[in-house]
Amino acid sequence: MVPVLAFDIETIPDVAGLRLLRGADAAASDAEVYAAEIADRAARNKSDFMPLYLQRVLVISCVFRGSRGLQLRSFVDLERDGKSEEAGVIQSFFDRVNDHRPQLVSWNGGGFDLPVLQQRGLRHGVVAGRYWEMGDDDREHRYNNYISRYHLRHIDLMDLLAMYQSRANAPLDAMAKLCGFPGKLGMDGSQVYGAYLDGRRDEIRRYCETDAMNTYLLWVRFERMRGHLDEAGYRREIGIARDAVAALGEPHWLEYLSAWPAEETRAGAGSPPAFSAAADASPPTLQQSPPDLEAAPVAIVETTTETKTTETTLYIDSSSIRA
Image (tube, rainbow, N blue to C red):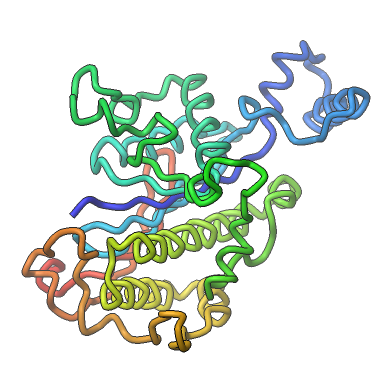
């Protein structure tokens, strides 16, 4: 199967970049540099939302659906020794694209997430060869690559569902809730910088993860809408996602699960009933699943630490793969 990677990022203002561009006094505090920028923007009738090249990536959360099952992974800038690790966070994301060549799925990823990752990656010297392949070395990418707006290796669901008209864009929270999914929990994007200044980095990570899960669930529903998943396949994928959320165990996932009502069949609506994924953990019907994925799934939760990122991983796998 072609793996799917639904992702979301959370960012904060790049105060170090502001210092450089403003030629700020080295004695000025970060708060003073930021306040001066906000005051200057207000004087020019601009919002306090920083341009994308000054959005420092703090968290990237991914929901990865591959042949091994469903995997949640977050890359977090821990700022060890007071130094930003943004470069490692962005490199880790593009390494996954390079290694797995997944179908990328986002909500406004073409308008925000990917331009930020590209511009910040350029600043830090990140290498992303497979992501930038547009057919010069691999003809398969000539007419379907991650970069072109109307190609499908990256699908920005918000942009596509709005027919590429900004006036028709829908919020992730609204669409998730209208489709029966939990939507946003805990905070919204406007509160991220304040949470960061208060030292609530883990709360930001949890918020980012639930947005990535909302995006993935809307992708599964979209796959049913365009006929790539039949009714049984849709029910299976939603059940696997439910089992994954239940297995994670962290408080934000318990809250997410409690806000996720079981789907009920409605006359004429075609909505499937809730079910357990234990009977079938095979991947979507786009391709045949490997035989060893037909066994009942087992939840495995791992926590590993890399040099520049932290990762929390969940697999819903068959016992044969785990062995």
